[in-house]
Image (cartoon, rainbow, N blue to C red; front, side, top):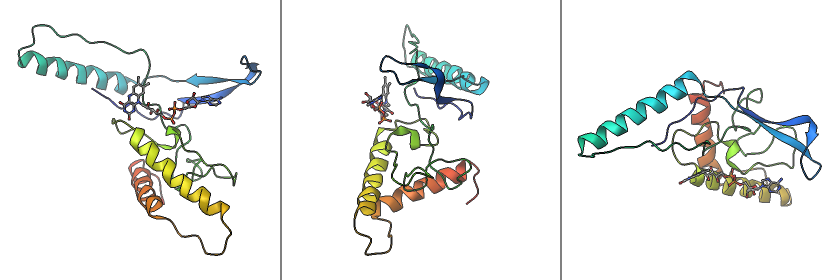
Amino acid sequence: MIAEDQPRRENRVSVHPHEVDEYGLPRTVVTHRYTWRDLKARHELSSVAHGILRHAGALYTQTIRIKTFSHAVGTLRMGLDPRTSPLDLASRFRGIENLWVTDGSFMPRSAAVNPSLTIAANALMAAEHIAEAGAPRRHAFAAPKTSRAIATLALRQSHFNGEKA
Ligand SMILES: Cc1cc2nc3c(=O)[nH]c(=O)nc-3n(C[C@H](O)[C@H](O)[C@H](O)COP(=O)(O)OP(=O)(O)OC[C@H]3O[C@@H](n4cnc5c(N)ncnc54)[C@H](O)[C@@H]3O)c2cc1C
């Protein structure tokens, strides 16, 4: 059973202004809080799952909670609007020309499904762009096949999030 938590602007990973880790680097701080709707969705899904199992003949059902979230995404979201999305549609960090992001943080939200294949697909797309950027600039930029697929995905996601193109 997988539920999706609402994307909250306040949920984020930041750098501690004073404290450092064992390597002397600024300590990362994860800020996260569930919303009322997140807790309600979890409760509803759990109740329905228990009901289905009992209906199927289960004599005993149990909820085993995990203490952390598994599909953390969205800390460096990809999108059309530079005001709300640090990454452009090539997974490139806006404002730093030689920085691409290839981990799960590019996904604005997880859509309550497993994200690994989408993360891998985006990394392949970003790799095409990195190779393209490193190659001699003889041709005008043309989006490779994978990039077009990901761009379409990001466009749909942006529209879903209510962003304007
Ligand atoms: C319990 C659990 C079950 C899951 N099951 C599934 C599943 O069935 N299907 C699915 O699709 N997804 C699943 N996920 C989610 C999936 O594992 C993640 O979404 C995915 O691994 C995220 O990929 P990533 O590249 O963003 O980050 P990660 O896979 O976390 O990679 C980050 C890497 O960076 C390294 N790193 C961190 N800090 C530094 C540093 N300072 N310097 C150098 N390296 C560093 C880490 O060691 C790590 O190797 C699961 C997650 C959890 C926790």
